[in-house]
Amino acid sequence: MTDWKGPLGEAFERAITYLDGLPERRVGPRATAAELHQALGGALPRQPTDPQEVIAQLAKGVEDGLLPSGSGRFFGFVFGGATPAALGADWLTTVWDQNAGLYAASPAAAVVEEVAASWLVELFGLPSGTSVGFVTGAQMANFTGLAAARHAVLRQQGWDVERDGLIGAPPIRVLAGAERHDTVDRALRFLGLGTSCIVPIDVDDQGRMRVDALAAALQTDGPTIVCAQVGNVNTGAIDPIAEICDRAHAVGAWVHVDGAFGLWATVSPKLKPLLKGIEQADSWATDAHKWLNVPYDSGLVLCAHPEAHRAAMSVRASYLIHDEHGERDALEFNPEFSRRARGFAVYAAIRALGRDGIAEIVERCHLMARRFAETLAANGVAVLNDVVLNQVLVRFDDDDERTRAVVRAVQQEGTCWMSGTSWQGRAAMRISVSNWTTNEDDVDRSAAAVLAVAQGLG
Image (cartoon, rainbow, N blue to C red; front, side, top):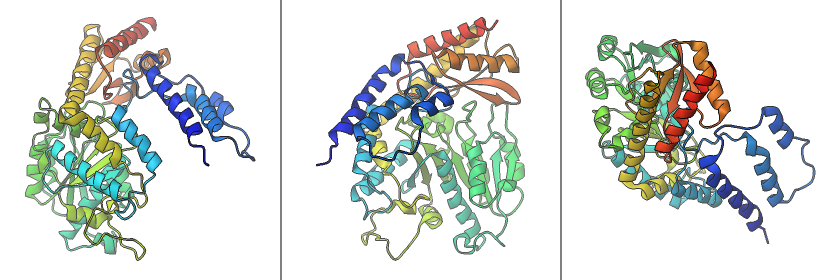
């Protein structure tokens, strides 16, 4: 009989120890790459090793190289953590090992995704009938949404891009803010459109697209996609979506929204007004592994035009079994064939938190970001942005090298972890508050550590 209890029991005990230790754990890796290679490397094993021993050795070997991004004092990038229900569902997802590409391969995965999809559409306040694809992250969500857009705007010109490709097709223009996220550019490369199709639209001092600049760019004819943004990765700024949609739709353009984290603000009654008009867009990209706090990887693409979504993604083959009753085949909504059943963790997270619980996480992160900014500003640190969501940009003594030095020193000190960035040509520390556990004590301890480190550098 196969011994499951040994390796899984070992994994469980080490997982609980890790999670229990997160609140007081040093926030940062403790080992160099060379030390990790020494602990984990070696010759290719020739003989089998006991599975429980393998798990124990793996856990011990990686321990000092982990970046504890699930900590309430981790503010680097825009990473969420994992709520208990989402983590438990993710463990079961691995145990069940379902291939979620087809209904026939896993009826349970298909139905759970369909239920979770309907909840997501309602949470975000999007049009009834909006289709949803479960992908790896915002990169593939942007890719998929823009693939649907490519299909639609070329179909308007009488061109079937799925059949005929792009050679000879009418050229597509993509109007996107000058402060767009790089995943948009990368998606356009993947789609064969190239980055030269991008027409950068001027933005204001917070990174919001200027509607007057967009209006001027829309005066040129031809198939057009407008990429808007809710949640600038540096400032958290939100484009004026209602005005963008009005202008774009008046000339037949498709509006795609990159809302990797910002789309979740629609769940908050306090923050939703910032996203006025979001339901008017044609497609949306977001991450569940950010503000919903499910484990990596979990991205979402939503499309108000399911026929365009399916046309861009669907596939037929003689050996595939498509349900005769029209049940959901996930491969019609994402670019993968075989794929992990990501819907289980999303379903569990939404069910455990409910609308109110999700709103509470979003609003608390917003309040904690404001607390961070107010504390640092009161102590002479320059805050570069309006804190509209969960992003805080700060700069020390208006000096690039000093700012970078503070970022490095804070990461080495270990109380908290922030990343560095560049904003409008100047170095900055970027503080992203996205974790469901972050509270006032986390922020106060972290702000004090940042100030102490900065003072200690002289």
